[in-house]
Length: 170
Image (cartoon, rainbow, N blue to C red; front, side):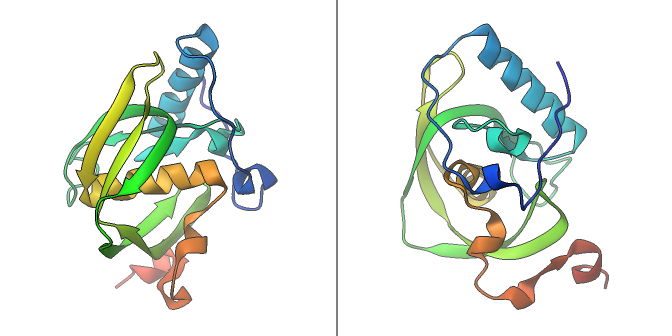
């Protein structure tokens, strides 16, 4: 396993559409997942997309517990490959987001409150879940990386985008 360098906003790969994974349960895919887990944990992240470590494929990982995010519900650790997302309601909610590729900054981002997501794990086993709240937000954020979208592009009012040490200093 290895901690990978996280590429930052401005890198062209973060603006590209990722390619689908065509082979599952391979040693290369398992090593990439292990490297992503180690990288995400080293940065204390809630999720990580393969493009963030300069791998242009449709692979995201996410998961956290309430110790790291005390205001959020636990979300099971998940490896999600070739995902699709479908809103289950038109209702959205604003929430503060950050990103390992946009370090030190936060923005208020609207996201669907309830979604269905489908895809596969690294073994090729299907995943199909209906989720809401912070779980839905994290999935939408990570999957945005697979279509070349960073969260600042979704912010509706740039007055609510800035450095976290300034935004939350009071």
